[in-house]
Amino acid sequence: MIQVNVQHRLGSFDLTAQFASDGRVTALFGRSGSGKTSLINIIGGLICPDHAHISLDGEVVVDTDQRIFVPKHRRRVGYVFQEGRLFPHLTVRQNLLYGWWFAPATKRRGQLAQIVKLLGIGHLLDRRPRSLSGGEKQRVAIGRALLATPRLLLMDEPLASLDDARKAEILPYLERLYDETKVPIIYVSHSVPEVARLASTMVVMADGHVVATGPTADIMARLDLIPFTNLVEAGAILDAEILKHDEQFGLTVLGLCGEQLWVPRLNGCIPGTKVRVHIRARDVMLSTRPPEGLSALNVLRGVVAELGQQHGPIVDLRLDCGGQAILARLTQRSVESLGLSKGTPVYAVIKTVGFDRQTLGTASRQANGADTTAIPIEGPVATSLRPEMA
Amino acid sequence: MFTLTPEEQAAVELSVWVALWATLTSLPPGLLVAMLLSRGKFWGKSILNGIVFLPLVLPPVVTGYILLLLFGRRGLLGAFLADNLGIVFAFRWTGAALACAVMGFPLLVRAMQLSIDAIDRGLEDAAGTLGANPVWVFVTVTLPLILPGIIAGTILSFARAMGEFGATITFVSNIPGETQTLPSAIYTFTQVPGGDVAAFRLTVIAIGVSMFALLISEAIGYVVGRRMGVEE
Image (cartoon, rainbow over all chains, first blue to last red; front, side, top):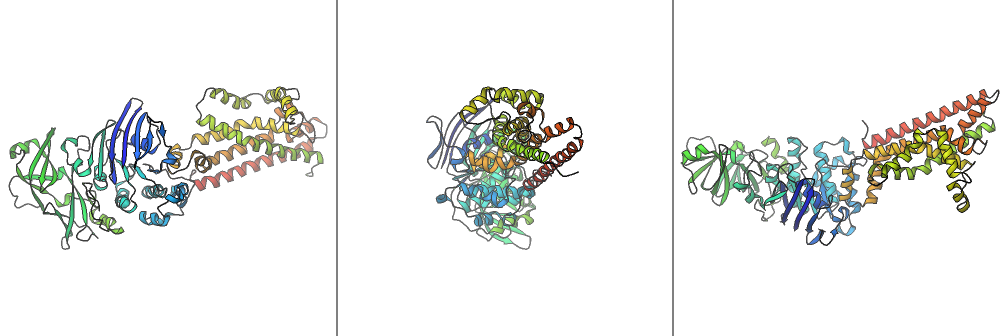
């Protein structure tokens, strides 16, 4: 359980943030300059805030009223920086073990071998940071933070400085991170696909303030938050289950709100595996009649649950499809010509090829934040998504 | 031609001895001052900066004279140190070492200060979040990262000490076997008839020692730089 209540002034920027999370992976989400990094710098002990009360698992680490400020080296909060910050004078092995030496012997959890295997960095141990690629550096940085046996892991846009191929290389490791280590994570990001894949809880920030907090799926389904998140990538997050694979056409069938969703083949996932699907609002078309002669494979029935604010020519709608929320983005013109209003039954058409490796992820935790029975996911599963999806 | 007389040999040995002492004893205070000037925010920082770098711009004779006033037998500090701690600088090799240390100090501090300024403070923050307290951060991160600067400063200061003449001769005079360092010896030989050969021999040695120091510095800098990936 993380409780944060912070008031801090940086020049002319006012940071006033309050949130609590018992989520496994909490995303601090917002645009650049919304105060996310300052907030985790305060949680990590790099900045001493003007007024704050922060507790981790009931232990107060900062309370300005009681003059409590646990210094960063005694806070046991791991920090993975955007640019890695590996020690250039040490080998990868020495970097990994740096925090491990300082961790109290009784509390050391991770073993080097185990972390090395989890992150796939065994072949790098004797090299020096300067010879590593960006993705390798970040994996080593994550391992180093974990081996210091933190109570909480802060990650400040760990993928922001990497290209798409490197991001795809690291994301599967991040997805497994909490499940295998049980260290809660606060993940700073401004990328909807990353948050959609990783986070169980979302804290949306704008201009130094917390705009909304809640389970990722709920937050992503709120039309009023779209201006704060990301206009392009906005879309619902759904939990689905793999029903079967279609070998002939290289497709996978997912079970979703009692209906079927066809997506490009998810390699290596056995039927029954839970997956998290991010359906971008701009990839959804609506029809008031059952569509015929359509190339799209996915047609879901639902009703219009909410119409959002019009921005420019665009309106976002939330549909209720058998209890799950799906967002759709239409022009105001279409909304009026179809006569859509709250309660109108509609058919949502979703193109199969609209799904890509960024919108599909295997996850043993549900988007609504609830625990699911853990389904063992083998290492290569998520990685093998890549060639298919690319 | 290349056999040294006992007097010449004494001058060479004394010079190396004095330079080693001057360099090694000024290392810890040099590092402290470099850290203060690089990181510190305190009143009088520019005054400290001025005092440290003054010997670089003052005529060495002036520096030597100031040392004589301060650390001479009847000087302000000299009398105190001699009476209470038994440390005497005037007309001793220790005085030569002090003069060399003072003259080399700005070079030592400057080199270290530059490498401290160049450190990514983020690495120290990272070490902190990994559980290292400030002392450990300094020992395991800061110190190794500024090592090239420390080495460069040390070599510069050593070379300066080997060549120091003006302040030394003003402060502790030119006593063979006690305060007559290599430059003073060369100077003395050029002043006496027939001393040219001896002066030349010592000049060759001075060039040799300085060149050796510079090569060592290059070599260490290369090895350290390679190890850390700072160079290239």
